[in-house]
Image (cartoon, rainbow, N blue to C red; front, side):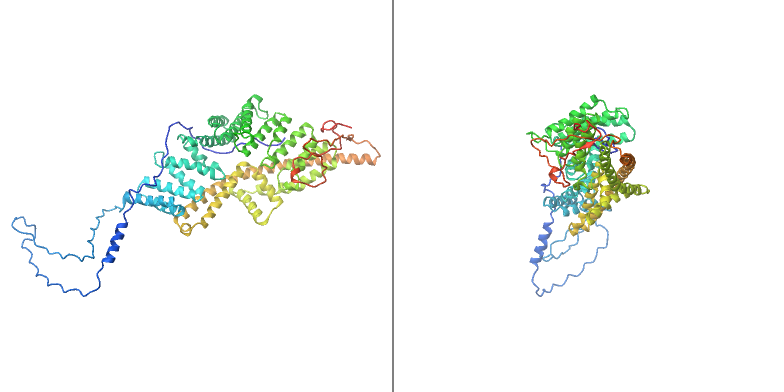
Length: 637
């Protein structure tokens, strides 16, 4: 039986309370308030007047002689007699071209000039740059204002403007870092609610929307605006699904089931009028299936009654994503995953015909198509329909998919040939398995035998990807990469790491003023730290995946050797009988009757070794003789 699992979600580690329903409104920065604009233009006009009023250079008149100085009074202190008159002071008026000097300010120790008014004007200047689309200039200015802020409100507003500017520069990971810092300042801040809204914008732009799940869960008690309620509940439900998976792996089954139920409660609140309804129903089906699975005794199939909610949810996904429906939600990926899960549930219940029906509904050429062909081959094999099972193998082993990773398909192929007394074909299939996957297993043994940090395992996969881009394809490395990236969680994290690296490289393409600014240094340090944390997480997943595949390949190699041993034994018996002049084989070979009749929409075309893309997935292998009469889908002659 194939070792698949239902398409679901993966690991997270934080649990927080569920959202309370307190109505809050969003408010943001007023970019049109000019009441506090700085008045620096007046001093400029004074300077211009001084320049134009400067007199021509002429001979200055000789001033009159100064009066003789008066003797100071005898009493040098303050005269309180009432009879004395203050001395007359004669002041010469300044030339008309020199304005009177402003009095020098009196500075108290530790007092900065400018205060709140100067900070307000500085932030409004940043907001103006943002409105004009000068995002790199706005980011630099906002970062400087944040460093110089004299109050928490100014610091929060500066960081909010910085985060918005970075988002507009398509530096989404850097923007998320600063939006998270604004949120961490507390719910009472003026920019807390707008920053929550920006989380949704970032989740739609990044390849891995789960990077916002921690923040969404951290502030789950905050009531989001109505237009974001569906997205919020869907993302929060994903958080609880990932948390449940982590709890199950840690052996905390009751807590994991509680987390699943919380996810189910949230997705039930997503209305069918939103674009997140199909995804929400898919999560509901996955949660119901996992809950039924963990409630079942190990090694036993889940009860049919317990699986009914999962079946209903997956069927609803298919209904609402039907392209023929006027109200269809365009989501082919979720639709195909729902078909796959319906097929797997029926396969586990040994309802093979129903499983084959749902496998056949997966979009041809889509992301899940090859997996559906492989798993459907198992269902055909169970039913004794070897022709269809072998036909699916022809597609999987075609040159178009030479680097795909389906090692068990060759052993299934060998078993079918062996059971039909086609010993030469069985031996050839085992030889292909040894040739293709033997080196892969040896390389996995070498990789996983060394003690090294988790990030080193991801670095290995990253090196393979870089070699692919520079040097072209390598069959061995391609297969190792394929098997690692068959893990959905690792694939998402790999894409996110590549996105982070592209963001870091993009700093070098920004204007020079940004590249050499303190902000650029800070952004790069933040992105490097985030990348390293992502590398460690991806490395742990990669190591677990490679070790799992190493062990499974080792087991398959053992099975292949047993099949080869049995096959060679049968071939030896046939040879001995021929040498003895006997005409009866150990198991009497029978010829199967076969027909070339096909449906009205199809045409029978003999396969002669060539492959055409439009024929992939439609092959049937015609068995002309064998020793499994009556079980191969054809009548015995």
